[in-house]
Length: 261
Image (cartoon, rainbow, N blue to C red; front, side, top):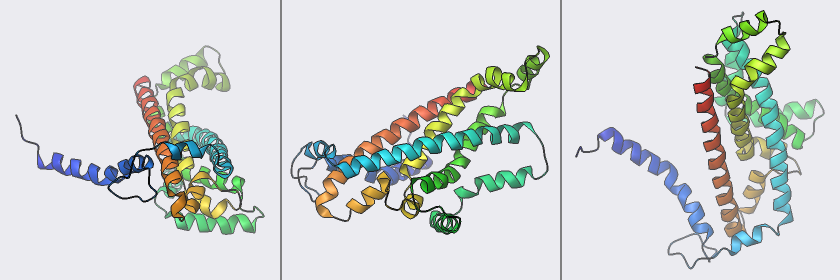
């Protein structure tokens, strides 16, 4: 039996350092006491049952769902055509424009949020769900472009050329040939960009105004010890939903990569 290498041990310790604290979240969500500490006082599901009766929480959840869906649709639509242009064509300023699209990944969120707040107020857009949606679309676009580029990278151009030779127009070829092949990439982009928007806090905190999204609501509740158990229960459900969405997105991303070969 081979002994684990130093790199394997390092990888295990690194993953444990990252994810072990997250695993304590669902564990303490079943704690019967309000103090997050060992030993656990007892086991209960009461905190989960109380979630359905909190109207402010439900409204914040609806806000996040609306913003996430619209953001996913906008970011994926723009990412689809941007990725196609970057993969298929050569034009002046291509590298510079692609760098600008990816810029939100490296700019600190607090800088982006404060800049957008100043910009939106100056053009007459008050803090609202619309402002949050615009900000999240800007933030999620690089993820969509990256996913859609992988879907277009190995796309066989001869399929579109054959459709043109048979008399199909540009729109019909795109709808009947291109879209079905890159559809798994589109689904993966929708899921990832929705997750990015749903979990984002900094932009939503600056731009939501009196219409908080769910992360902003959770932040407002975590300051009160009596609200902490409900917050842990809610966080556990969000953690489960985020993992499920990312697993589905990864499945469609891999399926897209295989289908484009």
